Length: 590
Image (tube, rainbow, N blue to C red):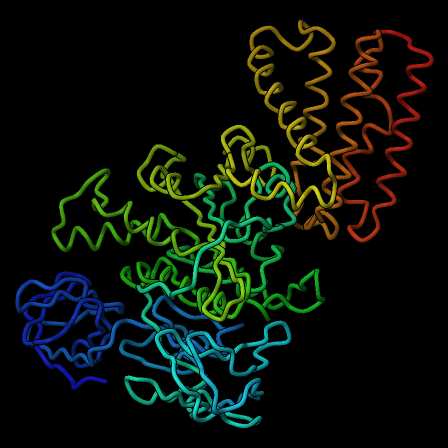
């Protein structure tokens, strides 16, 4: 660590502090400001003046107060103990702070992000004496029942492995290995710091081809996202952005979840904190918290910490990606992050662009979403990060800058519809405004389950699009003026909406729908469409088909048939075919 640099505050403008006398300080270095040693970061250098954004409440700070820096960039401590922990935007452990301070964070409080006293059982996997390059796997630590923490040689270190600790219990501060490199000896521990604004390196990026299964039918079937992909969930107030992200965090098949509550209301983060420890992972029967890291930066916390929180979250995600895990990052919401950026930019005097946002808004968004992806890690294994960001456009206006710029950098767009939310249709994802660019990438994976998947999905989507077109006509002339075939399309589309698109997150069977179940249900709905349309064209009345018990029963399949036993769906579809065949044998007309 470099020598301590000392200077003085010369001006204070909200969270923006100007200091001089810090000769040699660099961009993004940490500075400790005032008598309380408030944590800040250098965000601009103007000659001899360092401009610092302070991440804590700096009430009472004044010109003349001391500023010190150790010459280290803003970093997070990465090691065992991150899982099941909750941090604020600058990786202060909120549970530890609560025990020390009570309900409110005391100014200047500093606690280690990881427990320095806890001992972890380390198991070496190699022997000392060999060559250790970047990403070499040295050993393992059981971090939680769901996560095996892999101890790797960090990026930028390579040479001869001269020492490796034997199997045993160690704290994160004890030396575990040493590597003799050309630049000197590196002493490795179970935990190490990494700058949050610097992406962790990898060997190369790959094309994602495996879908992130979320258990939400409208996402997995109609607008899927690949592991290593990017998605946005834009929607106005009350459309269910946070609840949609909660559902994705609970049920998606990523190995690790990093949930970032960025500027959200405290009660919403409270729901996450109280729900996750109680929720059981469907795949392994273990609590979901055992594979989750949470970052809570609520709307009443300092604005600058909101700006850095997404970098803290994605850096932790990259750490687990480098171990070969699939990580899903939930950022809720990037609009609150952008608002923090706007406030800081205005205090810095930056020239405003669209709606007061700084001109570098698009660049910052791109830098964040570019940290997603499927990569070959330095250790040679594959790891991926999927980033799903909620966007909160004021008034639900998708033409505002954050939504528009985000749509440029993501390949999946799940637009939430206020009309659907008002009708209690959840998830309120619009099948008209949403889109995905991952269909071709993940098609082969789905075809291993059912070779007809792509055709089934497209046929159902076409029914919904035709329904949308016919609804415009119905508003003018009424449904009775339509020919029977078009009336039947309206019936089938309504059945798809109720039986497939709508999903109850409180229903024990419907909260998560397996891919196999999704295909079976959608196949049944298309069976109704094809056979029924043929009957309608032969003179059978639409109301006759709608009155069949087997037709109304399609809506109940999602909540009555468990994911682990789909034979009930096959039996129901058999009854549906028999009922339609009976109508065909004895049509009664209109």
